[in-house]
Image (cartoon, rainbow, N blue to C red):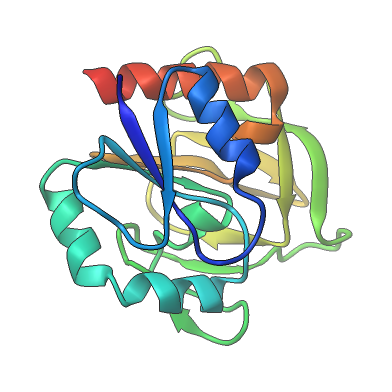
Length: 197
């Protein structure tokens, strides 16, 4: 059975994401620091960029070594955003720089936060995007990644933004799969296949 470690930043309820991962077959643990003996490390989507990045950057050398060793990573919402170079929430703060770009407030004349269901669209077909094109997913966010890198799924809320990014053994979703009903289940089943290969 594939194993997943959810990193507890000290904020938010981790029950939803752990339950969703268990439902598709993961054995799940929740801990306050990363460990290398798991198939998947999960950065959940709760908290502010500055607080979470400061927490994770204290483990940056360990996390980079784990990524280079082939351990897979999933970032959800804020967890995706931490993969980028920097964020402006709570003041300019460094991210992990696994993807290039800056996380900033949605630059459009729309109500923030963006809360609710919106369609996600495939930009590039991959194992992780299979079966998701045009489906509705659930979002709760005010910030998005502004990047020149390609991303595999997009969505719109005043502007186009990355809904899913993937590079090597790292994947991030701006939407919440644990709150996205059938869409979330499809994504997590894709994730399980990706982990097993």
